[in-house]
Length: 383
Image 1 (cartoon, rainbow, N blue to C red):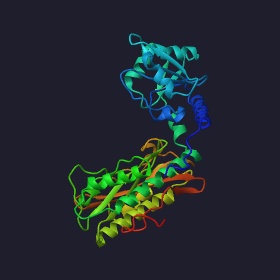
Image 2: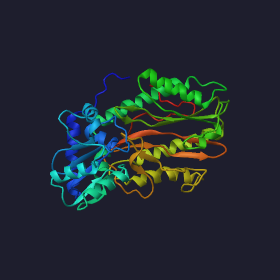
Image 3: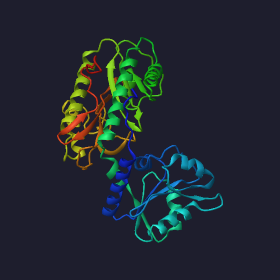
Image 4: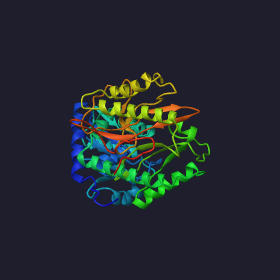
């Protein structure tokens, strides 16, 4: 399923940096500081560097070009990974990398004002820069990074669509291998093997029976038996862009109790989907799903039996990113935002039901990346 994948272009990344600069002006930030990670990859395409005690830092000024700071002995490798012509300044093992960063700020005329620090930048790195550039103030840059990354372009949505299509294909193949006595680890390996056959990597989370009530699985050994609820939760990445899908079914014949709770879960997922449209506060989506469950006697709030977590999370280059369908989040939805839609009914000691499909917001409302499950014994819509 690799044919036809179109990576993010250099032109789109340049446009992202331009948008970041506009947002920096709005939020009165003179520069942004990054360490390697998904935000730096988003703006530059730079990846393949691990965080260590030797800082690698990127500086994006509000006025001027991006520059990088890396250990001198790593310069050649850094230039292999960076775009041709990138400005790279180095520091020797007995020198301060933070002084080099301060030098870039000074050369870009950032001598007063506020420098934004990407939220995942480690404290010792930020603190080292602050000591070398004491005249500057420092603030959280999430308003800029999230302000860019929350709104996906058509190219990003296409990559996420492919990731979701791949995940459904892997699930379809793996669920055909269900058999009495198989372990949850075996099914997980089968899902991962299906991804591999499709040309990708996955990391499946699988639960059987009573352990499906644990939202992120259990460490307990599990063997499949007739009548067990089966829950698989997973995703893959295409050019870094993630999918996240949960399917819940039953091995053998489902009981009436299982069918009733599954159908209620489907109703809650549908209520969230109907509510998600431009201009609606994110918390309203959570409230819509939660009302379905509360009206049926579950909860209330985050109590179990019921829905113990938010209804959905943002998704993109990170499996969980800004923003969330959760109470108190008044962020208005906008076209291009992407989320999971995954209310869950957790009944400890019995089973859990979670249906999860990702959505993206369009001008006319929400759109699913994948068709939701039609029924407890039909985890996939007809292809």
